[in-house]
Length: 220
Image (tube, rainbow, N blue to C red; front, top):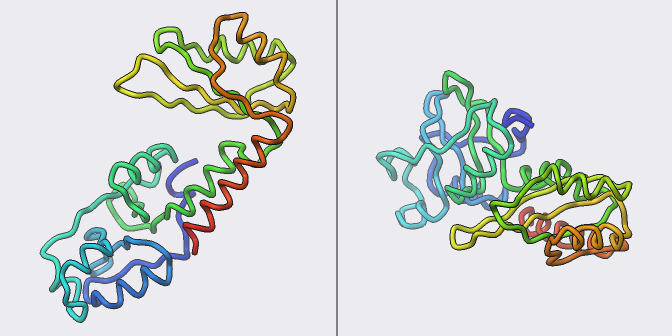
């Protein structure tokens, strides 16, 4: 999925002559803490709620409040993972999306991104979850997939958590079966460490509840 596909029509950009008060009101209305700013139709940067409040004078225009603004963005062909990484790196609730000539196309929000990721990652699909602990040097998704498929199952989605302080990876697998016992036993025969498993729909219900709670928090 490309960044262009993530553009939301729900969040309009500010213009440089808008006041700090208008920016704060819009952020409150759209439940975000950042907004893109345009000048003569061109993208000039992103303004944050905290930066505006630090200036104290909410009646001043954005031009008057800021000499320059940070310009975080991604191009329209960026992959959804690149969008996620950029938003995480810069701690953004909204990220502008530009074309190759740096023309402003629109923006995406953390709410939009999480909604799309939930569908991409098969969170809503029926299945169970296994969390493996794997040495970095031993990691092989081909072998992991072979073990799962040898039990007449398949991997719906996966993600990896790594740490600079550790030589191990946490590999989380979403499997298209609710009964994981045969798969877990096979992993153990191959000396994999199964850190956690969520079976019989319990994991799905828990994740769905957490996902719904997160969406409600981001939206409201």
